[in-house]
Length: 211
Image 1 (cartoon, rainbow, N blue to C red):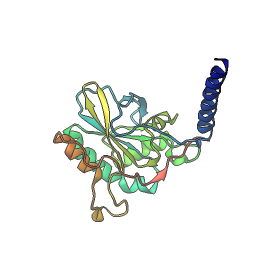
Image 2 (cartoon, helix red, strand yellow; image 1 turned 30 degrees about the vertical axis):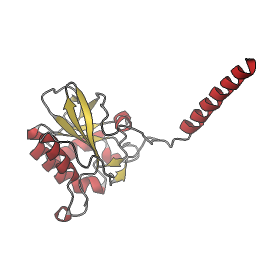
Image 3 (cartoon, rainbow, N blue to C red; image 1 turned 60 degrees about the horizontal axis):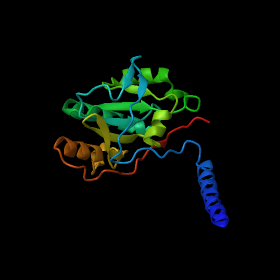
Image 4 (cartoon, rainbow, N blue to C red; image 1 turned 90 degrees about the horizontal axis):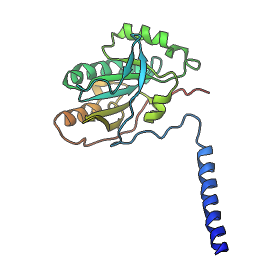
């Protein structure tokens, strides 16, 4: 009996040590985050208008196009007009854009809150541009790139992830885009259909994590 107990506790101890060793070597800034089908948690972040935005506060929307982006990344800059257009076309249909900058301003001063205000005015953003200064929201979602898209849809009181990935398949030239991932997903959701391609690889600059 005693040997069995020792053997059992030994196995548990080995399992605990294995888990500790595994998580101890997760690189700084690496996130796990949401998967398609997950219910997201509410968050509250300060926008460039000085007000705090809560993603769960507006029960009238059908969902959101959550975009992790920034000021300086060339990929984010190339996609700015497309993001503005997505908000213009789909915001009125119940899926407005929410843009979030999670970059560390000490690494990239261009991505500071003050510069976010300037950029939003220059581009006339008509959607919330939020500052994730603690980077907790990026980690919560599992965002790693700029831009990185998460489409969420309201199901009763919950917001459920329906798509994760890129906006389309050509950052360099909008005229050569052949697959519009976000638009296709939104069109299907608005029609009451499941998303055919629910995930793609996000292409862009890496999020600049705090050291």
